[in-house]
Length: 361
Ligand SMILES: Nc1nc2c(c(=O)[nH]1)N[C@H]1C(S)=C(S)[C@@H](COP(=O)(O)O)O[C@H]1N2
Ligand SMILES: [Mo]
Image (cartoon, rainbow, N blue to C red):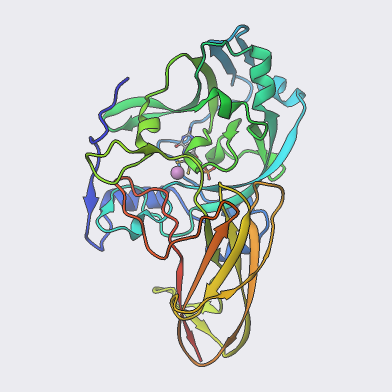
């Protein structure tokens, strides 16, 4: 189905949220920044983003169909899935729309600030093993992953669906997960089975998976077309795939209730946070206490496996005064986090530095 790419773009340059944004923000939630302290995010603190309603699926009736351009189509029950060899991977997941609310004008959508990111341990089966069993035909170019949730977006009614090229889908680290941090998936995280695509932004990790279809044409569905990096309404843009390099900081001290400005006692503080990239390991994290004028190198410890997040620490001798704390990361591919927001039509793939105001007394 061809979807025109300019259709549902709406923007606001008001500092006030629209009722639509408020409604989305009340349904979904980000990671509280203090929860960056956990190597593995406790499930209840993991960020959540659902486009439509959370489907109510019965594990006994649920089935996964594998079909399309494959030699041997088949259907699996949840028991069939769970009888197979299991693997567990730590994976950092970030919503492509993270940072959207910082843009001006602001694309109307989920108004994330900085914290639409988390890290979990996913247990499931390797996608590759299933695809090899089904025998993907030579004329297949993509695999389409269909969720059980249905809604209307861009004026089109559809199931939530996303595709991956055959080569990408056959990567070893792709898993179909039925457990998160050792427990069955919660309804909001995709019960009973979801796709996990390590290194990619969140939209690729299709929840409530019901169908995997090999196709001989590139997939053009709504959720595929939406996630394109477009500089203007005229620009067709490029697909959004892997997470850009980013770091976040646990705000030190205590918060002011409304402004979240930090109140910090004078003395030595250990600033800490996380860093990740879908383009390779984290090479360095730097910290500034003066809004980015001067930088010092933090110490970095790599995370669990190739797809978890790294942790960083940096000692700060806080003297009385007002500060703007900033952190920035660089990855092994040479990418460095930029200081400013990067405007684009969908408000996606924004990896600008977080800024934390702190009053030391
Ligand atoms: N079926 C389905 N899968 C989905 C979505 C959805 O709305 N429906 N949202 C996607 C988006 S945009 C993100 S950021 C992640 C969020 O995963 P989480 O809620 O488990 O953190 O799920 C992705 N998978
Ligand atoms: Mo997302």
